[in-house]
Image (cartoon, rainbow, N blue to C red):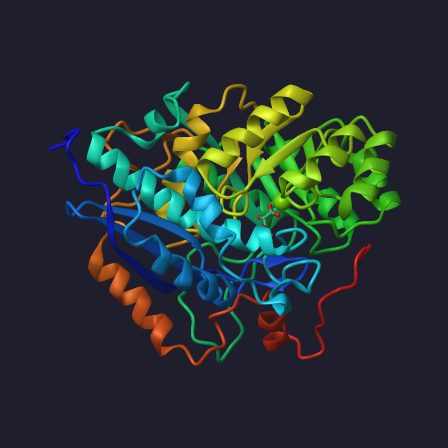
Length: 434
Ligand code: GKR
Ligand code: MG
């Protein structure tokens, strides 16, 4: 029973790294590994209420999450601002932030702050879940209340192989191969049949731009009038980006990160009327000013993990609103806890004009007792206290055991290394690739 007299002191924090099955989805850096690391966070209050959160699970996140978790014990789950100040006390190994672009994650410039914020997000969501359960309120109510009852998601289309390379331990999926326009259209049809999605995002930067233009044209023909996006993760030069924008301007809702970085995006933006979206050049508060004043992007796609959680995502949305920049959300390989978190925060953001994207349909496994469902391409916003999800301990233990059993090759996501299993000559492409 919720009560004002609950003891909200954190008495225990549990961290469970897991490996989750992932199909052979292609992107500009390579191919997804058969298993992707995620971290499940549990925060337990003195009253025995458990809140759950989820974030990236690669070693560099775990290294920060462990000392951070130790410092949380004895604090209040309601001290959400304190989560951010506490993060400053956790040292980041400089070697972890040397690379400009996070390998395999395509998460933009990696800074110590961003690494910390990605860790904090898992704890913030867990604290919000626990607090909501204690107060008998859904997470969206703790964020000020939902302004919509369902959140729209887009189908996230990927070029993919039928199977992971021979000899690699993996889970079989039933999506089949998609390496050309017909395959992409067929994949989109399945997405609409299974989940009712009405807008489509294609992960590009995999094949030469003309082939990806043809795939978007084929989608436009198969699904006339439906919102379409293409996201090559910064794989194109300014001139290539402009060529694609000219070829697809009549059918694109937006182009997502056609070119890498604010300079290139600003130049593309100044020479096309096709809106540009990003989850790569605006990934921290510090990057906003330059990108917005130069009109480099018209839509920012939040990843609540690296923005530091749900409350920071709302702050980002407010800044975007002030500048007349759209806001929505992109995703990375994730489980149901993160989908629930995305849905709660998205339900509270006014003026969400673009469907969020989610990898969730690509994940056959979860750590929840019940999978979250999409109806008509939307996720219903639950009013159940907390996130409204329940951890399945057996499933969690199974996915954790896979992490324990791993010889170390899957614990850090590395799409280029996964590609080398099929093509030993593969190296991470220099950008721009085309
Ligand atoms: O999972 O291959 C992928 C995506 O490319 C992901 O890593 C990106 O972060 O989906 C993301 C995006 O929108 O750029
Ligand atoms: Mg993107």
